[in-house]
Image 1 (tube, rainbow, N blue to C red):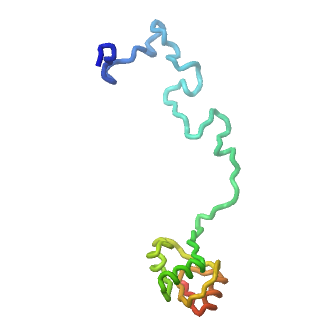
Image 2 (image 1 turned 90 degrees about the horizontal axis):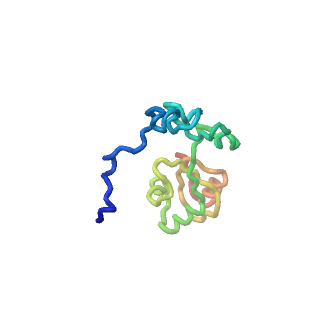
Image 3 (image 1 turned 135 degrees about the vertical axis):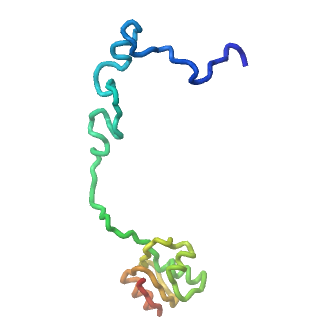
Length: 148
């Protein structure tokens, strides 16, 4: 530590600029705020996304389509995934709990079984919904598709 590096503690001294204390201070009149405009007024706060009066980006970008607030998001599980799980664990019935235990679905997921891949194992599958091709493939393999 040297004498030339000493500084007062932060916040202990006032700024050397006395703003808004009359014309004699050299900073009277507009008080360093420039001339007119919203930023020179008291109580000014800029709105989020404001671009100086130019049309904001979120209004310039086109918006397409419609998203229904009542849409149910489903978790897809394909037949090849079920076949892989059946050969790995040797199960004969696939329930929602088995899917949760193997990390294929969460407790709040709505599971839909889809028909991608081939199913050779005889397995009873229970899920929230099925595609037509998935039901056909499960029944063709000798299993049963049960809707929860």
